[in-house]
Length: 174
Image (cartoon, rainbow, N blue to C red; front, side, top):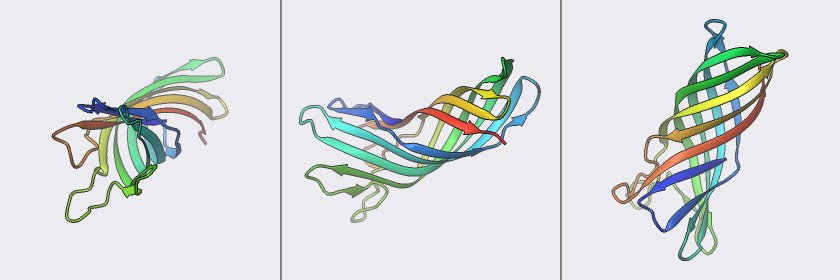
């Protein structure tokens, strides 16, 4: 689920939307209780922005990639390992669009009439995750990420928009 954290945008509210990610990762055990885990994610994110006064709703869709690297603490629990990780990520957007009723759809990374694009493609942030891995490789996990770079490319002087993601996942480690 993804969302935007808004500042200096009193008349706007952002609502979590559902998306999906395909993730490849490598867990490199440094010791019994510590590991490093780099990942490669391909994301589809979706969220809704609503203007409070007019109740106008705008749906945002984003396709992109992220490369997080987590430092992981782990310990044996029952028939597997519990873990918690913290790290940073860099992200790059391939395509971002908005759709609204009674409005033309817009591409947020496209420059119009020599003007900067509405949003920028680069994101850098941090995340935390926790989960459980069974002895046979199945994992369940949850995570939270927040971007540190203002997603706006135009209008930066008037407002700030930060990316935010809450995730639930299931995976398998070979």
